[in-house]
Amino acid sequence: MTNIREIWKEKAGKAKQLKIAMFSIHSCPVGELGTKDTGGMNVYIQELAGQLGNRGHRIDIYTRVHDPNDPQVIHLNDNARVIHLKAGKNGHMHKLSIYPYLDDFTGALKDFVTRNGLQYDLIHSHYWLSGQVGRWAQSRWDAPHMVMFHTLGAVKNSTGVGKKEPLLRIKTERQLVKHCHRIIAATEREKTELSQFYGAEAEKINVVPCGVNMDLFRPVKKAYARRHLGFDDKEHIILYVGRFAALKGIDRLLKAMTHLRHLQNLKLVIIGGDGDTAPEFIEFQRMSSKLGIHDRIMFTGRLEQDELPQYYSAADLLAVPSYHESFGLVALEALACGTPVIATEVGAMDSVICEGKTGSVVADSRPPAFARGIRDFISNPLSETESVDSIRNSVRRFNWSNIAKAMIEEYESMLADFNFSNMPKTSSKAAFI
Picture 1 (tube, rainbow, N blue to C red):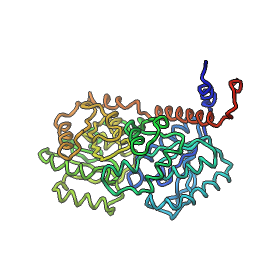
Picture 2: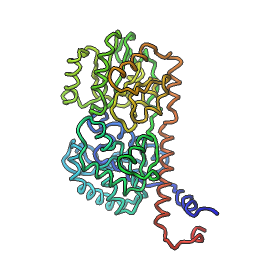
Picture 3: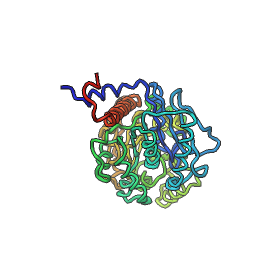
Picture 4: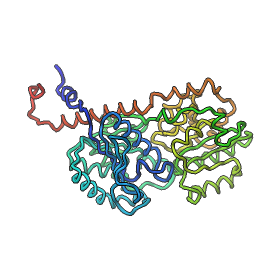
């Protein structure tokens, strides 16, 4: 006998066009990448929304006004747009400082939705602050609510690195885990952490990995990339790309460089940051001088996404020295450009790196061991003609089109479960005919 729930899922999951409200309150998806609160999550939201829009679904991404000169609505494509709403002061605000203004944000959201006659099939919140607004919308709109945390406060605290995340965040995340309809984890590791730290029900969590834009991140001939960027062909170039947050492990990478003094023509190129007056930049400059490696370090500052493929292609390897990652998008970007990755055992590194073939995951993450991982690849480089295509091919399954397809399946499944749970309890089999 056919299961009634499965019949309902089949009928309810056939939406031709989904109307999706996404929330990214603290960080604008079209903000400057590599700055304090703008990183992998922003890339994720923009790429996913763009792919969903290209498939005919309608996506509105609501975020806080960061720059008063930005228009209220920015279109990513015909079906996906970013909508800026007022909450707190203009300009950058510390994430925790935004929390008291979430009521202002929901008020502005209510006005915008009412004024424009909008309705949504589902809610997709990114990060815990957005999840609070998502809970409000979940109740007011009677719509299913999906949450992707991107990072978890309790997990960050467990590393003992950087400032401790406040109890408010931990409590909020625990409530979101309890009350939302679906949680998307980027890795199996994150799924385990959700259960371990927050008691999340395993059946509520599904794993959908992050993706990479294979059209943007493509190999460039190394010799050409190096000439264009002004690098010497004889240099060994290690690349770091990302924010200057404590969890990213730049301090560990700088210390690892002290164990590589014997390697001639070795240069570490660091991309990202909030400019040369930012405290983090000044601290890393000071550290590199104290360690006696300042002449081997190059800080480029923040770069646009379309500039990165040349840097990835010019490098001998990308270093991901993080203490914690929810996924690690930069590793996918480097691999898509045919560049191997040396990483600590964080995020999705175990699943995206083919050990010894496309890079290495260093189980012992202390600086000497991380340095050995770098040295082994520098000393025994892969053949460029043999490796670039094979490294790139190893991550084709992470193309954003595949990730969007998987996410649509999650949306439709969540909608079907939501509709089934809300159907009249007296319904009989005849109701499905």
